[in-house]
Amino acid sequence: MGFKHTPVMPDEVVYFLKCESGGLYIDGTLGGGGHTARILEAAEPDGRVIGIDHDEDAINEARENLKNYISRVTTVKGNFADIKGILGEMGITGVNGIVLDLGVSSYHLEKPERGFSFRFEGPLDMRMDRSKDRTAREIVNKLREKELADIFRQYGEERWANKIAKAIVKRRKVGQITTTTELADIVCSSIPARYHPRDIHPATRTFQALRIVVNDELRNLERAIDDGVHLIKSGGRFVVISFHSLEDRVVKERFRALERGCICPLDFPECRCGKKPVLRIITKKPVIPSPSEIMSNPRARSAKMRAAERI
Ligand SMILES: C[S@@+](CC[C@H](N)C(=O)[O-])C[C@H]1O[C@@H](n2cnc3c(N)ncnc32)[C@H](O)[C@@H]1O
Image (cartoon, rainbow, N blue to C red; front, side, top):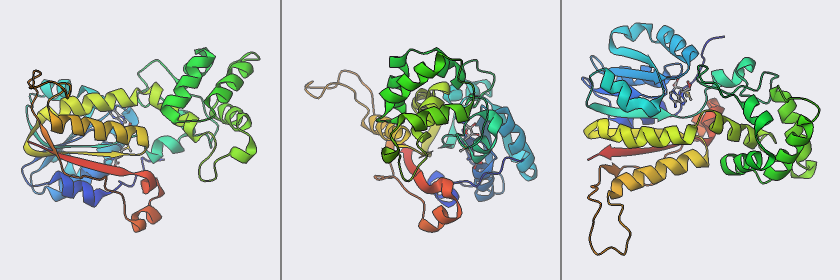
């Protein structure tokens, strides 16, 4: 199966990035190349994109999907958190915009062997970058009950975290938990049926929490924003699409901090840190997809886009 992925809010991405001919844009989450293709079209005839993804499959698929733009796109296998190093090695000091479309793609979710989905039986993996060692299986089978509960609570906002962690540890006594469906069953049976959420699968929050930890998603996002902003030329834009409240909170807080500049305590009579504002927030509230987009692309349902301009 190919890396079928319909880009979320493509018109909004192109609009907020202010794509134009001659521009150089970074797509930090290349995926199947959906956003990159739209950026390249909007920046004809000679705008360029550097597309980064830490998943080898995504890179291969994007190369195939972007064949028609080959002279204007460069693909890099890497983590967007390393954006400074990646661009540094390429000798690039300034770009016109950066876009991040966070999380997993439909491709990841539909491939049972990647272990992201509770709907299909697969190994408990969840690594986006398969050159990394730590899988969800290791976390689920090795961490202590309290550590597991903390992860489910903090990164899944799961109110049944303690019960789920307890059930996992109990189940481990008879053998390792190795598959996605085994874990999903344990989660389902830890939450009383009358409290099963109506709109999502009961294991959604637990799987989200594990995925965030396996891929260090929130820290990567913070690093990408803090370092990426300094690589954008004055007037260029930073656009981020997030899919759950924890990601959106990181984007909102980092953008606000970079807009504020000074980090001195409020009761200091004058600034001692010397930090100056580097961003101006463009979207006071997050931009959300239109109802018709959500109808045609259910993945867009929980998307929130925020954009800021480099001062
Ligand atoms: C939602 S998909 C992007 C889809 C893409 N915008 C498109 O239109 O085809 C997210 C992609 O980002 C990649 N990704 C997630 N976190 C990453 C990170 N820290 N560094 C590099 N790539 C990352 C995933 O491997 C996945 O391919």
